[in-house]
Amino acid sequence: MPKTLAEESPDGRVFFAPGVLHKSPFAGDVAYVIALWAHIDGDIASILSRMLKSDIAVGTAMYLSLVGSGAQRGALDAAAKESLPEWQQLLLKAIGSVVEPSRNMRNHFAHRIWGHCSELTEAILLTHPKTIVKYNVSHRQRVEVLPDGRGVIRPTPLDDKEILVYRRADFDAAIEEAKRAQTLYRLFYAVLCDAGEGPKAQLLADPVLKLRLDQVANGASAEAKAILGIKAKEKRKN
Image (cartoon, rainbow, N blue to C red):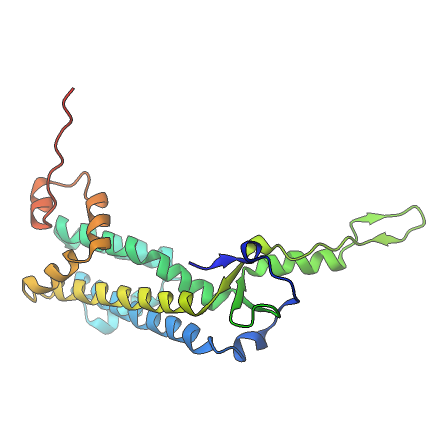
């Protein structure tokens, strides 16, 4: 998990520009995470096509036409509710919950701003565009007008609590989480295709997914829990 620049507290010059990522040794890692999620979205589109019992090209076109991950997730959930047995709905919901941090990181990699600190030569910085806008505005916008008509500008430093520091270990973890997301969705697609017990067993062997499944299946039927191997919780005695 990357630390904030405030936690690192380095000296040195901090700057943000398009060329930072272009010249960074981590550029390939950023591109790889984004590329993995492009393929994962294709896998999810295939899952949606399967649930809609439609041609894969039709389902993919529909899924990719939806703007934003929220709309895509809503379409997937609605289709699952109408077409899948309860245990598969729960499995898909748990997968979506587990991989959400990886999807969010992909979005950050694609839509946020990369920077550099002269004292952190083995790292690269990442922040929200609003952080840069706030900084730029403070250097250009008059916040007070003196009696003689002169404007007063009070520049503020970059908010280092809103700047993340990414190192090699952070990118390695981001890649592994994206690969895991791809594996989970591909195994679920195999479940939908009735590829035997193997894919389901592989999914249920994932400890993080199993834990999340126990949580999302809290109010599920006994039948769904039995299929997913979730033991009924014992009621506490008074």
